[in-house]
Amino acid sequence: MSEYDAPAADDTFAADDYEADATDTYGADDSASYTEDTYTDDDVYSAVADTDVDGDGVNESVSYDYDGDGFSETVESDLNADGWIDQVVTDADGDGIAEEAILDTDGDTYLDTILTDANEDGIADTVEADTDGDGFIDEVSVDTNFDGVIDDTQTY
Image (cartoon, one colour):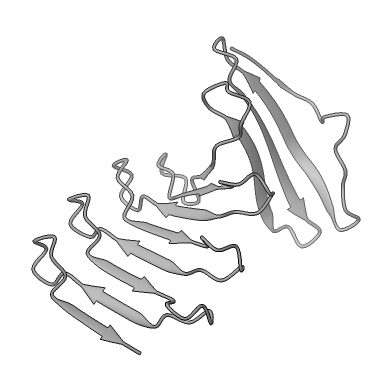
């Protein structure tokens, strides 16, 4: 795998930020990634990454380690390749199992579903849904005894 730090020919910069580092990485399996780290003029850090993990030419995900503990807390995915994040999956304890997913499945820019797997059994314990599409959560379903069966549903 080769790695080098250099801005890409088509890099553009807004007047209020500058590029701190840009890295292109290529793997033997044709996978590639481009990572750009920027700071605003207020010294606020932001990271942008496009990653093709499997070498199929489609960027899959972005991963951040905000607290520097070596585990990614958040993975964001652009599922329809429109340049907007469609899904956020959180692995709070770094064990590789997602505890939370926030989705905008209808593309209306409102998050419409939150799934939580607190006991990490692979079954959503709490489902919150925006059933009428107004951008507000309308229903909460809870599996209080963690047996995989919804025990309580409240509609707002």
